[in-house]
Image (tube, rainbow, N blue to C red; front, side, top):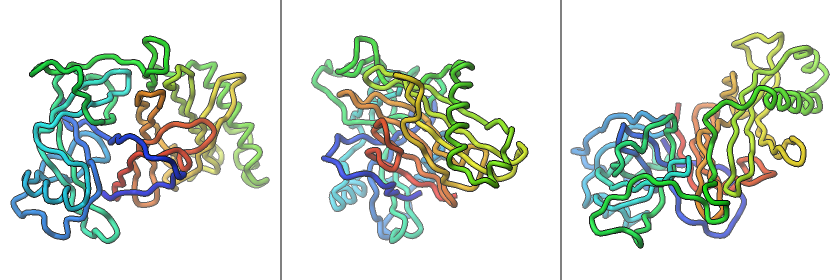
Amino acid sequence: MVASSVPAVAQTPKPRFWLAGRYDGNHIIVFFDAVKFNGTVPRTARPLAVPTTFGFLFQRELPANYVAQITKKSGAEQFHIGDRYDLLLGDGRLTTVTLTTLVGYASDNEDDDPSYIGALGKLYDPTALIGPQEYYVLQRHNSSDDAPDKPKPASTRASRFTAPGSFAGLFEEPVRFDVQTQIAALLTERADTVVTAEERLQIKNTAPTLAVQAFRLADGDLRYYARAEWRANDKFGSAPVLAIGAWIAPQPNLHIAALEKITSPYGFLFELPELLNVIDLGGGKTGIIANITGPGDSTLGLWEYQDGVDLNHMYLFQSLVTDE
C-alpha cells in the first residue's frame, strides 16, 4: 500500500480529515500520514491481523517511542496511545474513539511507494459500527463539551448549514425503479454521442448493466451516482464496449452533472469509481469515499464533493493505494 496523488485542483488549506476503516466489531484503523521508515522498523514489530475493510493491509504494531521519533522527524500528525479522535460514521452520527495500538505499513520500495503510519482506535459506543458501512472519516476530537471521564457515545449531528435533522449521507435503500429507468435512458442518450459507428453497432438494442446510488448533500439536496456499461451482444465476461460513471442531479430536471471515465480494463462496473460512503464533514461540506480500480492497483480516497466536476477535480483530503 502506498500514498497516492490523485490529481486535484489547487485550493486553500483544508481541515484535516483521515480515512478510517472498520478493523473489527469495536475498532477502527486509520493511517495518518505517509512516511519513510528507511529500514528502521524494529524487528520486534508484531504483525497484526488484516482488517475486515479492503484498503488497510499488512500493518505491524509499533513501539510508542519509535512512532514519536518518526512523526517528529517527518512533520506528521502527532498521535499517542490514549488520544481521542472523533469518528464520522456517515449517517449523521459522530462518536469518539481512543487510540489503543500504534501501527505502520512498511513499503518494500519507499522511493516509489511511501510507507504509512497510523493507529487502531477503540469505540466508546460498542454498537456504533452496527450496519453495512465499513468506511468512515476521522477528525481531531473536540473536547470543549466533554464531561470529565465521561465517554462520548454515538450521536446524531447536523451540518451547521442544513435544516435541523438533515445531514449528508448515503442512502442504504435501493433507488426507485422508475428513477433508475430514467437514469438508464439519460446515460444511453449520452453514450450515443461518444461511441464510434462500429461501437454503436456492437451495442445496438443492448440494455446497459446499471448500478445507481442515492445520496444527500450537506445542504439537504439529493444526488445520484450511477455506473453503466454496455457489452457487445450483452456478453458477460467480455470487456465492455463502453462504460460511463455519472454524478446526477434531479433538479430542475434529471441531468448529468459530471462524468467519470474508465480507469481499468477489469470490467463489470469495476472499471469505474465505486462510491463507498458519503460523510457530513460539518460546515456545509460533503465528503465522499470512493475506490478507484486501476491497472495493478486500487485507490481508496476521501474527496470533498463538488457539483459539476469529476473526482480528478474535486478536492482530495487523503488517498491510499493498494497494490494488487
